[in-house]
Image 1 (tube, one colour):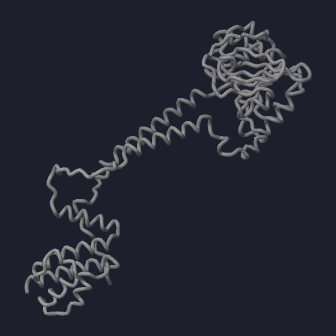
Image 2 (image 1 turned 30 degrees about the vertical axis):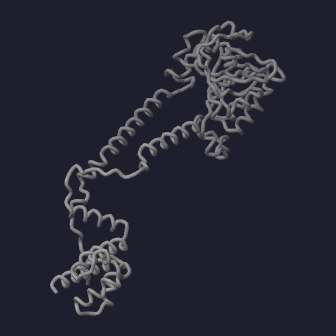
Image 3 (image 1 turned 90 degrees about the horizontal axis):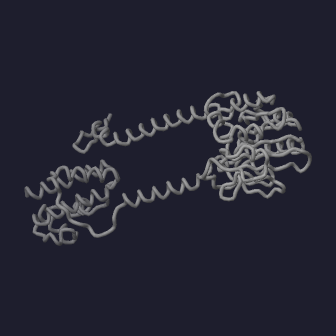
Length: 397
């Protein structure tokens, strides 16, 4: 029964202290990033709690709007499913869609079909590319947002003229629909659009920002006046908060991975790629001639030999290790048998001299000094022992 020999610990073996010293910077950076992510997530989750919810009294809630509408005898009903929103439409109803971009393509098509001929009003809050062109035909969003949050009406829409300046700055829109009212422009593009229905008295209002509905900003500028006029033109308001748990959202799986990525992901990826390229260029090996440099400390020969041996072992370079051992042995043996060092690596010169010195056959010497590389570590160790034995024998004789 054979047992595997345990290699002794050397000065080059990594210790727990060395491993911790090398890794503590990375671990510390990872912990800082993790803590920062948790804090940011907590802050953002708290800030978005109850956003545009007519029941919420939080900063981004909309309870104040519903209270003001109730004072004017306008009822507000909250719905969270497409079926409820579709059946509630009518000429005496204003349907407010709080987050239109959460709707799937199928939901958008069904909702537009229900509201187009209802004779009521549909208010879209900050719709983007996924929804605005379907729910409000003839309107497309502009990729660049508005630079100013507070804008002037600059249109003939009575509700906008009475409200005056309001915080509508957000998404901007290109409009090709006929007879549309274009209000609160920024750089020539409106942030509030009213599109009349092709038939009847209904219309669709596209609102570029939700600020006029927030509790925190309702008392600023003409926000309250504009919100009440847009939502209070009919006696009933149906407040639709789309939900991902809605059964009608079953076709959400048809959206591919690219559709689910937020806007700007491409530029962000390019920036990360460019940053990585700069890091590689900074850390890459510089090409050029080698520059000799004195070592700052003296290194023992044993440590150098041990380090090179560990590199050979790590790379499984038994052929190079065997070649180095044989070359060094031949260099030391040549002067002992009267062969010039310059011819120590020539079998025709070294082997006959060794055979005559040892009074033996040169065939085993050829396999030992000029043979093929060993097949495994055991054979390499055996080769080392035989080379040492040969050198000792030559020196004794």
